[in-house]
Length: 290
Image 1 (cartoon, one colour):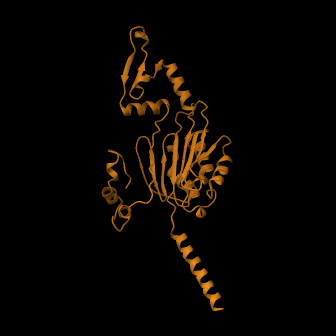
Image 2 (cartoon, helix red, strand yellow):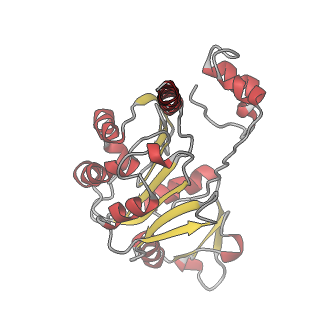
Image 3 (cartoon, one colour):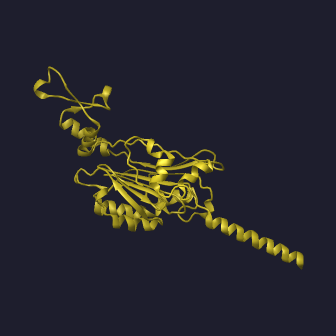
């Protein structure tokens, strides 16, 4: 009897210990959802930034996170969330969340807001990706496995594609993509350039735009050099393809002393952590929401 009681107590202690570990574990792997909406030629004023903050707050409740702070510039609205971040530009929307958030659960309300408030009716491209979870058993639907995530996305999109990169029983990367490519911004660009007799100079496509001057067409082509701000204004006004270069760095097994910089034991404010870590030196001139 005593032996049975000891075994029972041991099992109970083990269960309690496991429950405590589950309670304090936080999933650091981020779920990333990025959506580009098809330009709307009949509504040049279509813009995801028209969606007001209270509506974003309601949408994020379905994801199980909330807005902590907000900053913006001419091109993008950036939200710091309780579990990572959200970025909203004219026709691109990005949501990154970690923990046990339900990122994909916001798809239906997002598509409704994009249509009713922002003026977009079609998706041009969609990307959903994440690394394998450390503790997948602690996730909730529709994120209990990549198969479930794919099935959920397929219920919205018949033409999506799913991939897993790497060994599925080791560290790997899951990716779901949708690229309809039915004209979109590329078609708008071609139509505008053709109607205005403008052609891109392939040799200097990043810095130059060549304009045919009809009055001097037989003599020469006028080459106009553009500043970065002028290029962004052109992209915005013509709805040309938006620049889309991003870099993501995933790190594990970091030095505990370095990680401690981001705790209140070492830094009392976010600004202090930014300065002490050196993050502010990574990209000169960038805006950091402390």
